Image (cartoon, rainbow, N blue to C red):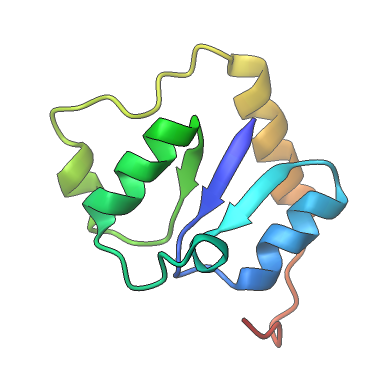
Length: 94
């Protein structure tokens, strides 16, 4: 499972996920911190990554297209378990 963390998440979250074996990168790592949501989605699609975002606007772009089809349910369930176990400190700096 390959993740792309959107700019709304701390950049350090990618490092924390990498430390537990998740292939995660942040939009800042690919110079997409100011990119439009559509560009982020397209890059993730080309790279086979799942976008992890707190941005409520993404739903409008995804309406009418299926970005994430959970073909690999086990990987998705594993990701959810990791999110429960990886605790981000409140004072984490981007």
